[in-house]
Image (tube, rainbow over all chains, first blue to last red; front, side, top):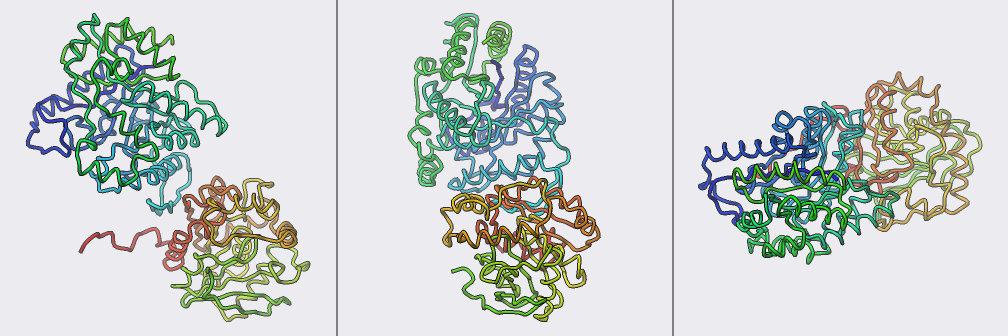
Length: 362
Length: 266
């Protein structure tokens, strides 16, 4: 099993995290600079302590993440992180230009010497407002964009694309990815529709900030669909993402994580967005499952359900092993949920030095 | 119903009585059907808004008598050149679908001055290998899956009687030639016409993986992938096909440069 450090380049100053979009009046440029420096330091430390991957993602208009374009952050990481793979999990594909996404990912793969892990995300529904895209079209746009991105990487000759949502007279990528035929592709598969799509298209899957029971249902569905499509996913095709914090003792770790704010779904927290998105069909058939994973829970329940990896190194080993055993996941994607300065850096060191060697044995 | 505005006619050429259907005004687009025979779709209707669309039923297909005389695709192209000329059409865009793509290319080889541009739809003229699936040689259910990305969405089901399927299969089998036809390709390299080749992304009969062959052999060939289309691109994505073909026939290789406004509001 492998481990990744996921850092959102969170804004380290004071700003509300439950309002979207958030006014820029809370933004201090000096804090912005420091926030990126902290994120880069954490990624560098993870690389030094043996993390197999580092992960970046895309979010807009919020202090929760200063990474509206994960490609930019990933490009910086090509120089900062020398060994670990660089996982972009990922661009919110339906709101972007797929040819541009293919080009940028190819650049990252080349600049990193073939270390890219390419996530294709449908994204959180509020993000669609950032670029004025109809969330009702998210699945169709996603399917077409993923096909176009893959072909942009693999078609040698210039080609035009006549899609339903994308129309290009000529595509011919330079540079082309290092990895052959292309970088490994992942997508979120918390919905049944996504699991089916990933299985049909031989993509890996990820489950983020959900619970182990929920993820187990989804990964089982994905594996059944893959079997029906004639292949068997390996553990490295399954990523599980959770908040994490490690300290010398369980007591210290739990005390530190008590400051973790409850998870806020920025769409569901905004009445107008919630109603509009719900009507759009964005959540698909399993609307209950899709919205329930964002339900507010107390820390103890979140630990019990596997939403958080928290404790001493010994406790963390058991928690990660449970994820491996129950889900067959091959990658644990560890999100720094609470920024605690030196204690967060120590958490990364402890995981890398005391937990990771065991994780590699799973 | 697709093709409702098309009128029917007949032309005597090369000893054959050749049926055609026609609609629209403007620059001509001569359409040569695939192995399933002449079948109009909404794509033809859309093209007829801006072009004079002339779709032939080639000798030996459909209701025409069995054709035992034509020996090769080159022969058939010669016949079709005579048919077009007999109609008084001197310059035209030629659009060949599947089997018809080889006839279209031969027409341009034989009378280069007459063809202004060449459009190949799900072409079978050059193939990576012999032995791929052929819709006229399988069951109607399997044929539907080969022809359409979404058979359930087709309002006009495609059905050939077993006798017609056998007649078409025998004729196309005799005329199509090998997957890599060296004498044909040797003539293709001299074609200077702009060529647009459309491939459906889920076509198993003329897979997009073979598209590169056309660019490698033809001097001025543009490949376009039509998303979520199987072998019958005109039935699966009629608006997309009509737009791309119309733009190409009107503007030739300048079609690469967008000339429609992207402005949302004035």
